[in-house]
Length: 119
Image (tube, rainbow, N blue to C red; front, side):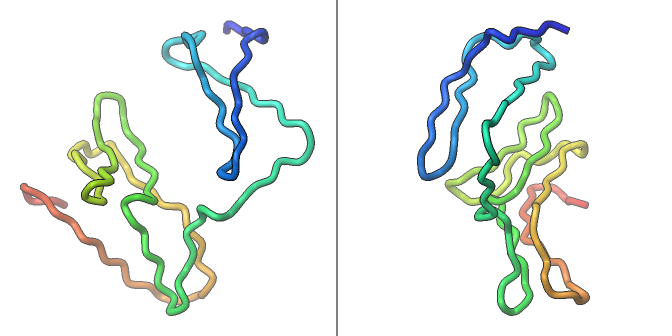
């Protein structure tokens, strides 16, 4: 394993948080690791966590999804039409992180469009 402790990255902090710009060639083309050392206690926001509405529903939008692509697939979020596109590979999964505060039995429904029959 190649370790390059001399590599430095530019950071920018604003009201959205801190962005780290990774530039240059990765030490390993397949699997490289960047270790981030933080001084002090990190400030973590839960602003992006999806929460239940007052009526108990949880709306999971395409924009809030976490797309788990597999090499060679091209599943993506399309913001012009607010949907997940090119989802034809069975190995690709889409997840959402959300909190449920009210215990109960829930019904799940989805809006799906496809040119071919979907399962």
